[in-house]
Amino acid sequence: MNATPLHIAIDDSVALAMLQHLRGAAAATAGLHRAAARAIANTVKRHVVTRKASGGRWWGLQSEIVTSEGDAVSGRVSISRPYAWHWRGGTIRPKDGKRALAIPMRRSGLKGIWPSEFDPARSKTFVWRSKSGKAYIAGQGPDQKLRLLYRLVPSVTKGPDPSVMPSTSEATAAANAAIHTILKRAIRPGGPRPPGAIRPSRSHSIQGGARPHD
Image (cartoon, rainbow, N blue to C red; front, side, top):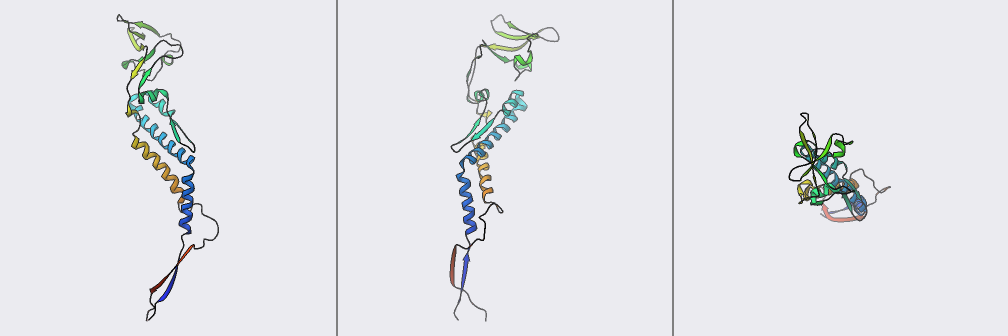
């Protein structure tokens, strides 16, 4: 008994349409760069906030000024110069005509608070020098005793501290996840598809694919 030929039409137009959308999304590099940079910036913010709990108000302020941007060439994340100094290290010197940097004393409770914020009118503080010549911004405590608030120094130098930033693997994972999300949206079911009826683009004939029942 001869086999009955079966003609099976394979419709690959949906897959081709999805591939077209995927290629379009991948070609829109500005959108991908912006999404990746935004994801990394959010990762940096979360990382800084975890330090805020133990590091005080200053770290909270740094998390608020992390920004991101992107274009067709690249994505970029910006952090403040003081934050970059904690990360990369280096030397900080006084600016704007000032002669010294004010470093809060550990027991002052003023970490992250500038002297101008603590005493705007300079009515409660004064400069005090120790016998060894070290200079401080000082005040009087409730018991009228001398209270050292800030130490005045000509510069501050520190080494790099990678722990103030997320790891490279964390940043890479965040960027990859953001890009994957965009690409998935481009091919998700129910997403934009070419209008009109879809016609099969390939047709294969299979000979002897089935036999009739007796």
